[in-house]
Length: 332
Image (cartoon, rainbow, N blue to C red; front, side, top):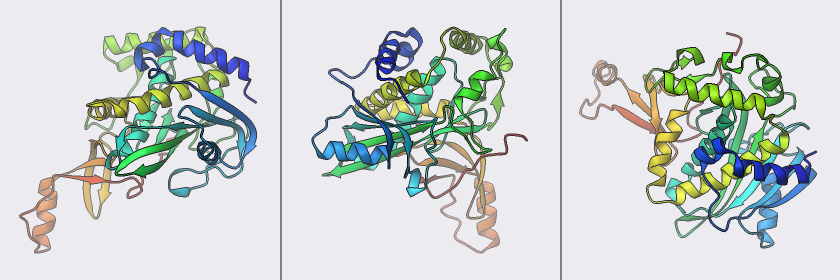
């Protein structure tokens, strides 16, 4: 069970931590957290919506030790056993409904950035997963209420594996931290995108010198500053608030897209779309995934099938739920 006093201290720690402050920035002006901690609820998202209906303001948080009916994207059951972090927060984004998908991207980027600031080399899997060592560390569920074409209210739910049991494609932070090299944190292999269009991963030793220094510094910081469940919750709460603020700024989404893509593990991944082969080349500000299609292959397919060749596609956008990118076997 989370300790409230330790959580309050952890929020102060996040605010004062130089790495987190530099990478995420401060909370929005006048923003305040109102935190309720529960032993067991059906769903932390549902609990926050109930509090919002009673007049609770943005910044209202529900944290549960266990969920009995946790949900993932598209209503999937989210395994919520004791030992994980299950946290939801009410927010009021200033966002056009057409760009609602950017809210999930912003929160995912902010959480990953916060964790990376303390040495956890988290990457992003489109559209809403946090991954570590090629396995699922956590996920994000965004629920919105739209009024007059704008997202008036939203609840952001985050589940992160801390010490709870996980499936083969999952990982929890407690085991990750336990396996860190004790004598030389910089020996840890940190998975980072090699660059747009490559679909490859770089080990720590192969990074450019300036990036290598940053990663080593973060890992050394982790060895000195022990992460706890309360600190994890504080990072997540802070990240939700900051990520929501980002999408409300002028040009905020455009900047977000670039930052999100830097941590996107799917960049360059080969996918098959209706018989056509393509590669993931980024995300759109709506939250859609961008897939580049080889125009020569597409043209040849159209010619072979006697189809109109005047509209040969070079890039297509796919919405969440229209394609599954899956997880590879971590043992391979």
